[in-house]
Image (cartoon, rainbow, N blue to C red; front, top):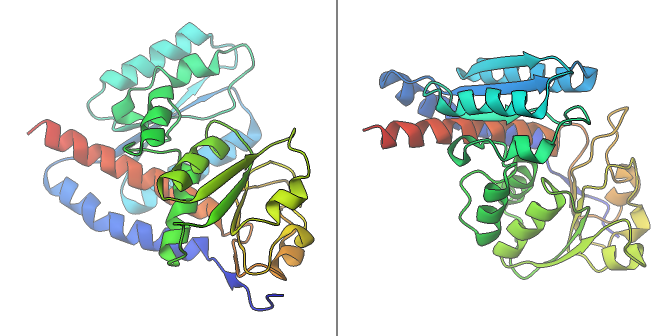
Length: 284
């Protein structure tokens, strides 16, 4: 049993990423370029509003322009697509984020796939997913990229390890599985239909919890010495793993909050700066 688990401090990793971005933002400013992230929100969901404000504040703190486009909840798919197309054409906008979920009458996938691949900084398009799968995606989904960034920041080996991912969403479970596979992990993807889930998790060297259910992963599921990456965020600042119980066996674990979440936002900022730099080079 592991009694001294390493707490993987996502807030510290995020601060390091943002500090590194400041110099790059300064160099862009010297060229007369200000990195810009446009966020599109449809409707007035309170949780989405909070997320959008958090992302906007994070942008402004390091010198990225945050452009918010607020649309009525009655907005149609075609109207939303038209707004995104206009942002695609705007040379002053480098990244586009469509806050999800959108109202149920909107075809979310059609809206996501309208985003230009050069501006898909949140990694939500079908093409972006395919590029991630092939190992050359410029902007993988931000939470999967954050998980990899934390592992790398703490020099936790991925190659040759058995990673078990609980969850198969197109912007978290599936892409993180592919990113781990591309780093030479052996990957098992589990989901709501998986039989004997606890036994499969017990075989994991790295556990990624992305199921959206509070304290779902139990402490006795964790093999002694395993690394636990909790990508969940539930009401009351509770993750997808039973943190105290899992810590007893884990060699390293992300807390909630201050784990994967801050690095996800820092990754979004990094992708926006990456996109601005790519745009500046293509215009030279």
